[in-house]
Length: 83
Image 1 (cartoon, rainbow, N blue to C red):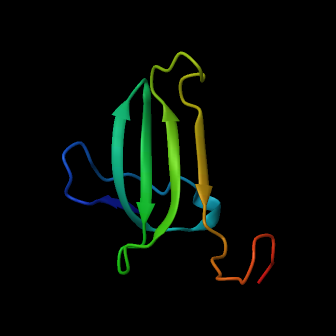
Image 2: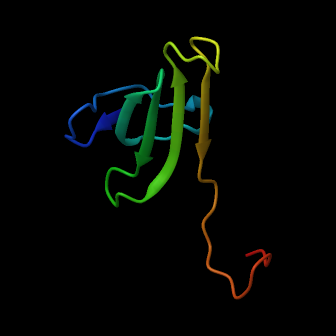
């Protein structure tokens, strides 16, 4: 379950990408005909993903949901290097 950060315009919502089984807190922005969410780990507040849902958008069909989730995070020595 995604819960809010106590910011104005935020609220509780289900995980934006159920297959990832991610839980977190979300900062939400319902503007431009979409509901944009930044999802953070509830304990560390590290960014774990985002979601965009079409409400009455002119560029996406209503009900469309796009999302991204962080799969791995690593520090490397140079651009293009894999962990």
